[in-house]
Length: 91
Image 1 (tube, rainbow, N blue to C red):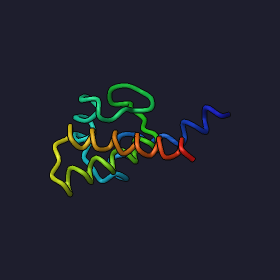
Image 2: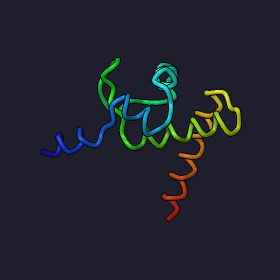
Image 3: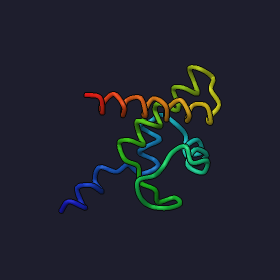
């Protein structure tokens, strides 16, 4: 039962693109570069979790609003995640 529930929470590539307002090619480029990780699957059968959706939205915002190249957007997102993790640890 738990596995089915977890699978229900995963997004397909099309769902991720629709909710994250990005194109499939945009996602493919970032997965291939290692800036975005599918939670499950391979090739065209990827599944993405809530963390991936959050990351897609963050990367897209950084690239769009600050005209950041994908590498820089990924670095900034990684640093923000690390800062948030450290803040949680301090509490």
